[in-house]
Length: 618
Image (cartoon, rainbow, N blue to C red; front, side, top):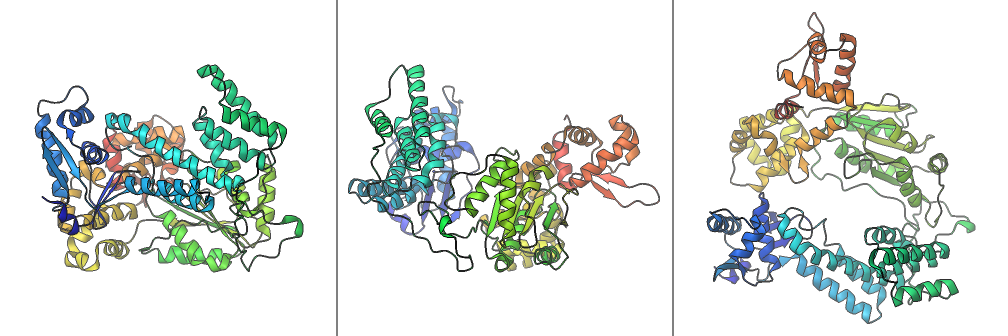
């Protein structure tokens, strides 16, 4: 296999975030952590030979299996087959090396862009340097080496993170040189908290605080660092940090080296500002109309009625409503519908679109106080001090929205207490809220249920991703995919992506894989599109009594049951059991069949049923 084969197929390697291998722009599935580990280890070797012993240590630690050599050969073979032809993995004396030739590698791109930025910084071209270094950092798509073995992470991650942090410091230095101290202040606070003994960052934070008129805070940051260094390391601050401290005390810290205020033109729809409320040029939001909506779904399909109902409410055609609440099961496409509706009515809210995902990365709810801080900074460019209590922020926020036509999209809300402070008042601004909970206590909000996709819309979703002819050629199997996914858009999208990335699969092949109930939820996972994880989140967000009832009822299996059976199983009165059942139905974790003479019968939706059968011991 020779390097010239790279001319036949375009390869891209990405490790600055989730590990990815792309062939002609199409991601190659790298499902096994050890497979990713072999690839990343070879990439990080820079073309040098990596011995079998080193790879074994990275894969299995000090106790490799007896079949180590055979397994290692299997991983190399799988990598080669994934890119036939194109991946130049060469066998040397008791090891392997990877020749990437002219293939793209995001680490190399990052290093080259960083060096260009540093050269511009040395040449005094600060604005250019800031842009070049920011472009280098933009290549990072998330934490590196999070999906490989722990041994490789421990060995290589510190070097990569140090490189990233060093470039971040240089970019901040360039920003400070052109007077963007207010822009980098929040970033520096977080970095110093994360790296408290890194004196260069602490000095940059002191500089930024001093330049925004907060010298006392700058001195406090120095004192905190001094105590930390003395207490933990037994050393005093270095000369550079002491010089900055002295300059702050004497009020003679140098001004920016090359002031370059950011000039942004205000929207013509925005009314003139009073002279006392001039835009501060070093504020990132200065003169901008907030446009925070995430990217629209390009192949958005179905939901015609729900979209029309949402737009009619937002445009004031359904009485005096403050907004819309989109409720549905996990993976029903509520967020996609909310964003799509936002783009459809942008012209109706020309003075801004605010967006926030109300769920933290760990699944917990964000606090309204924090969310209002971000919204107010976008609505009040140039204002550095915000109200310090929730009530004051709510009053200021609602007063601002009462004078403007702004759309507020609140995604993944967990409860009404989280949403209520963020709803606009008055008739000009409106909100779209998405939640798995019905939230009937929210006044003036029109609820729209987002259920399963009907079969034509579900087939259209599949066709939009994999191609209409491929679905039309196998109508029976395509319809069966819809049934096995229970019409859930998230599950359908995962199936569509699997078909797209496996062009040799027939739709019937996918049906065969989905038909196995034990492995269906494993198959319905592709990167961040994970049906099982979404369903589990729906359960964990329940209040403890409802959550306990859910797992207790899971022992009843797939057989429909009545309220009386549930009460007996839960060992509670039937009235209490009915309350718990209603809560689970409202949370889309149970379905109630219409009564036929007696009371309704309850059952778990098909995909939820797969989840509970995995965890019968809960």
